[in-house]
Amino acid sequence: MVGGPEITDGRDGCVYLLNPGEPILIDTGAGWSVDKIIKNIEKLGFDPQALKTVLLTHCHIDHIGGVPEIKRRFGSRIHIHELDAPPVENGDPILTAANWYQTNFPPTRVDVKFNLPEEKLTFGEQKIICLHTPGHTTGSISIYLDRNGKRVLFGQDLHGPLLKEFGSNVEDYDRSTQKLLDLDADILCEGHFGIYKRKKEIRNYILSYRRQYGLE
Ligand SMILES: [Zn+2]
Ligand SMILES: [Zn+2]
Image (cartoon, rainbow, N blue to C red):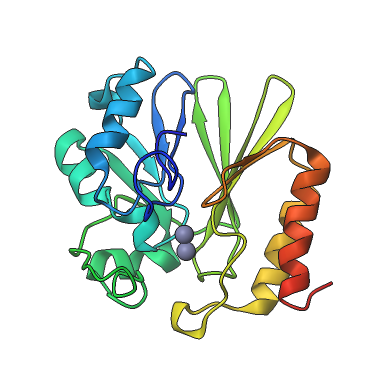
């Protein structure tokens, strides 16, 4: 974790760095803490100039706010699901939730738009899978990979909230969280609440939100 409410800025969603032979960022924080995130990347021994791939889990400002600055500094290619791309490219204040954070998000071009239920990215031997998991937003994705016999799931904002103004959909959320339960992940890296390292804990975590939305 190189960014998040506890380590960079209270407004940031968690930012994770993957290293399948090159640094990859999952989400970028809310935008105010880009310098701190970059320092954390350097502290881990990575050159931020090598940051060519950024995966965005969805279009909300607490996850995408750092994108314009990261793209400008490092020329990183921005990946997002095609259904969540328009709010980013249009700088939509409501669909990006920028209005909630009393800021604005400048319209920013994305480079890769996912459109499959499951997109596989390959870096050397490492496969990274981006699952389309709508619910919180229509273009939310969850990312997972298998490494050293462990399945690591990045499930940002799988807790919701489910709001009309975000285009949330409870039937989609039902199917998506079921898919995530079926993954039977060993480690869950969540978007606001940090990292869960026990299968049972992860299962209970997902079930508790399914319950909250009347699905259990
Ligand atoms: Zn969030
Ligand atoms: Zn969100």
